[in-house]
Amino acid sequence: MKYVLLINAGAIDEDGGAAGCTVEDWVEFDQEVRDSGVFVSGESLADLVTATTVRVGEDGERTVTDGPFAETREVLGGFYVVDVPDLDVALDWAARCPGARGGGSVVVRPAADFSN
Amino acid sequence: MAGDERAGHVGSSVEAVFREEHGRLLASLVRRYRDLDLAEDVASEAIEAALATWPVQGVPANPGAWLLTTARRRAVDRLRRDTTYAAKLALLQVEADRTDPAPPPVVGADLPDERLQLFFTCAHPALPAEDRAALTLRCLAGLTTQEVARAFLVPPPTMAKRLVRVKKKIREARVPFRVPDATELPHRLPGVLQVVYSIFTEGYAASSGPHLQRLDLAEEAIRLARILRRLLPAEREVAGLLALMLLVHARRGTRTGPDGELVLLRDQDRGRWDRAAIEEGRALVVVALTAGPAGRYGVQAAIAALHAEAADLASTDWPQVVALYDVLHALAPSPVVVLNRAAAVAVRDGPEAGLALLDGLAGEPRLRGHHPYRAARADLLRQLGRHDEAATAYREALDLAGTGPERAHLRRGLDAVESSRADREPGAPAPG
Image (cartoon, rainbow over the protein chains, first blue to last red):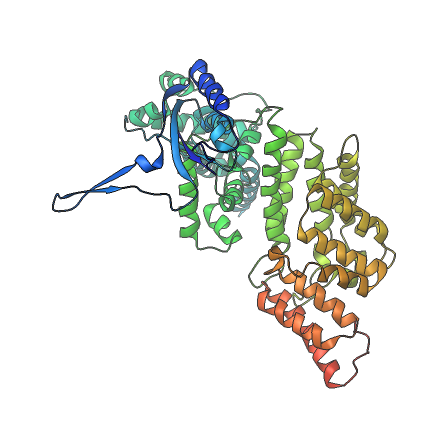
């Protein structure tokens, strides 16, 4: 079963990385996820200032705006999709993710299954 | 008529069997099909079938095996009819049961007890805290949705909706049915014990409603703890929790007066405490506190045992009670523990000492809406003859208190201090 791990960065340090973990921590975690065979996909997102929002109104008019900018301290910083047998295994991976530390959090959401 | 009598007798034993078997049956079915809804449906169909046949044919020698066999046959029928549903469950066992023309009857007197995994699923931290107790009562205590709704004083449709939602999360997020391994168990067991204890405390001191105690809930919690004790005999905190509940429950007959009014520990008729429950509880306290560091339930049970052993309030071993509260506070710090410790200090060293500790909690945000804190302050102020302050504290407590009997108790305290003030006897000792 596929679970999406949504990584919310907590406090951001001056380098734009999540406080409380190092680049080495991320490299190590990423390697573990890939080596274990549960990895489906994953990306880390570029800085929030690069974000652009698109909305299409009822008249079909496209609105493009800069942002969004974080209204809270938690900002979606990246995600992993893992294929594991059940929620407990997904929660274990989330707990090992460096993004869960240092004031960050990882939201675990099952991917919707429309195959049946 | 003799026939009716026999049917009546079978009827009541049928009910007793279901209370006992429902949780076991459901757990076996869940382990097999990994689907709570299917398990619940075929479990209730098997029980309906039993209600139809047992009064005629008599209760079978092994009712649990009969129910499991019947339920599995119903599950097979359903999975054959609904192949989409079967595909969704997509499990080898389901596949095997579906192709098997008729599951062989379950034999053997001792069915494996698979309730432990169901306990851990129902108390899973990924589920909403307020639904864990409801789900545990539904699945493991065998209460109907209506009974669970009554237990939590919510309308049955509301409870039904909550149970549907929580089962949807279990199914769709795939919350597993498994017992945590030895490394996880220390993290997960407290959650299960917390669920059982929350059922007990709701029964012991209902948070609202006309009655102070809802004994049926307390008894369900004790029944659940007995099951856990059998399933996890080496876990001393399970023994501690069962001990705590038995020792507190032993006072049930004396906690309220003839009109349902609250009777405090100091005024309870200790001769009417349930000696059998106390003896069982005391033996379990020894188990809980032997051969390892004490847990929070074991320590609370030890405090309850000290009260149970004392002939009256004065001869209670208060220094030991205070010392145990210190241990408890180190294990599980909380302002409520500080409050209870202060109440013990007030008896050991006098109301002034207790009041000083209570006033130290004045800024504690978690006690802001806690009426026992206001009530304890009010009682000590009254004992000290500080009637104006006592009246204020009683009014604050009355603004917060939940059940009718608690409110009536506070009202009596308020009336007493107000009449003392009216009599201009500021130094008079408090009555009672």
